[in-house]
Image (tube, rainbow, N blue to C red; front, side):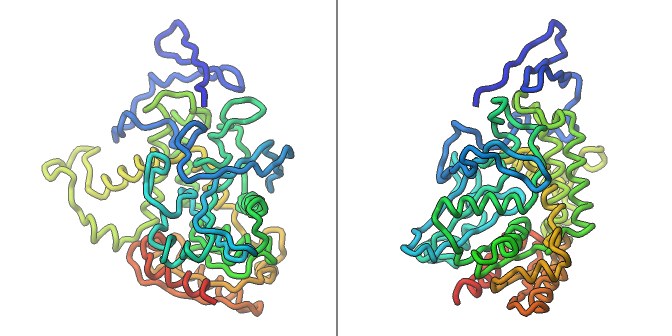
Length: 420
């Protein structure tokens, strides 16, 4: 992607960037760096851009010259979906499994890290040859969500009408918009009915919406560590994270893509990630791993001296900055807040009555973000309307992240739903 034009004024402290909406003034040289002193080489965006190594990604334009209508009311003139596949689709297209990723995930659910894919597959222990989701048997698909930043259309993508990144102009989307875009990919691949759809957290929201929106296409689902609708506490946590990101002056109200490395909204995104990381894990996991250990045992009383747990949060913040986009974080995080299976469908029981799939769900005992009572409610609601839903509570001290880390137990949940 060609960089935007940068014009310099005569004054040494003011950068003026020429963007799609005219001249945007930034006086970032007057803004001090965050006292946490993040690495100076952090990218403005960790998004995948055209020209970057493609790796295992495939791409399909799902709009075919027609705008893609979004539930909140706006449209996108063009939507590209990046996806990856493993295994071979059989002759009657009956062996396809869709895996839906969580907030900061992407399509790389299986495989090693590389220059093309910055992290190892996020469920690599579950998906692959001779694994629980056996790619010798199943044709596995994982799609980078609409609004994401690893190849699918999102805020970092070029707006066809301006030739500039969408940035602040990217519209709000919902989980239902994400699912409708995925359905277009399924059509492109010739998959009329999935063998199963599985996912956790935000991925679980997509799974539930698939079952309600396209019941005839979904005979089996596994939605783990997720909820029928976002709770008040989940929305509260999300709101604080988004506010922390937006307070970074280098966020520039979403139009930061022309800034130099180290001058993007890395502090805001890293802090938003740190806030999330606290409720992704549990008190037990933090205490057993870090206790009150200092980074420097002789340095305690300085305002920015760090305990080991602080170093851990900073590390994960920087790690996310290198592979994710701040605007995508905001857009997808808000989409999670608006998740409500009952919206526009009457009661929650009415919404669940649409689901024809056999359902599996699972909880992590120490999950404070999506606590077990939310997955128990999924089971109760499905059974109330006469459906079938298995439920497992997994004893793991990793909190919400247990859905990614307790791979043996999560794998057993999936094995049960796939084996019939």
